[in-house]
Image (cartoon, rainbow, N blue to C red; front, side, top):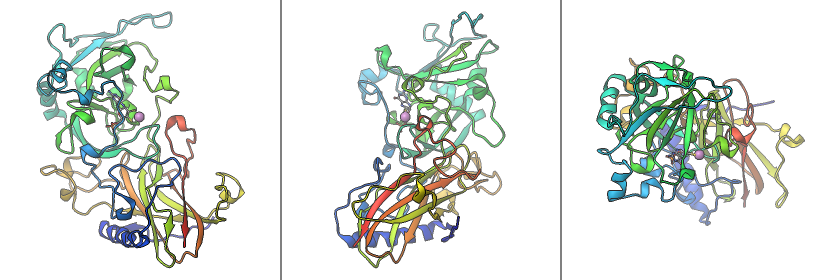
Length: 431
Ligand SMILES: Nc1nc2c(c(=O)[nH]1)N[C@H]1C(S)=C(S)[C@@H](COP(=O)(O)O)O[C@H]1N2
Ligand SMILES: [Mo]
């Protein structure tokens, strides 16, 4: 299969310039533009397409601009005043319990045990100052994209900061017969509204070198985590989809039950899925004026198997024809062309919150302050493609990611129960 390398990596400035070109093109059409990328909601923080521009997705998504995926009636972040205090969702009132599940069964003969439990009843549930004190010794911070397993575009990316789950569990002294860690956040009194998740003991306690640990986050982009993002304290599981990153965290339960109890598992999702490497296309115009370059862009998520490149396929079709079917003969004969990936910023101090040195961020070299790999695993990165000399007609534009093992999206995990990574298509016309 022939592949043309367009321009490889663009510097941030070049990237902005390339995208800037697109602005004039889009503005030039003067048309009202509607997204027509099949099944794709507008990307987080996206602007109207006519002004869509220049690296429209910043490296850090402002906390208020994440897409929100929270259940609850009322949603916990809509609580105010006394209700918020009763819910223990203010910095002063936040408490977290760590308790043992007494569960046994035919198969599970002995229950888990802990040297020490932390409970509201005993008056020793963990408070925020205690957690932050622990964080002074064992702080972790890194860039992570939040993505819902069931939504085909990233929700946003933050610099998350907190303390590893293993350090919190160590406060409990000796553990016996613990095989899973269950955890959940505040929900109202209706037990049906509980949204919970779990990790294996191994996942909670041990991190492969160069990987990122499960942790309890209390800062996002250098600020306390806002209520809407799950503050005061949120579990953040770097490698996982959003459903493992429980908001309004208040309860950890250690158990000898070996089964995942994730709410998402009950909804026909794989509870042990990792983030998938995939490219997503931003909202774009459906009509372009002939003779001008056409610009497309979007985000790629760097999942479990990393990201080698993003590539696109432009295919001319008859107006009104049915879309090309994935894996049919035409699709298999496609010639994919490499897209440009945004390069890492030369100056991280202009990206990170004031006072945060990139040298202190996991995944960065502590001496140079530059990322040890790019793009960074579990993060999102902008890609772009500029198409020139298009003749009037109807076209299908597709983009896909290729991972570090050489698998092209949606391989190696095409089943959507582990994350939505179908190859997206945008149909447009050149007049
Ligand atoms: N307590 C609680 N935590 C939760 C959820 C929830 O409904 N309640 N939704 C989860 C899901 S499915 C996703 S995709 C992410 C979304 O995070 P965000 O709302 O900060 O973007 O939060 C996760 N954590
Ligand atoms: Mo989700």
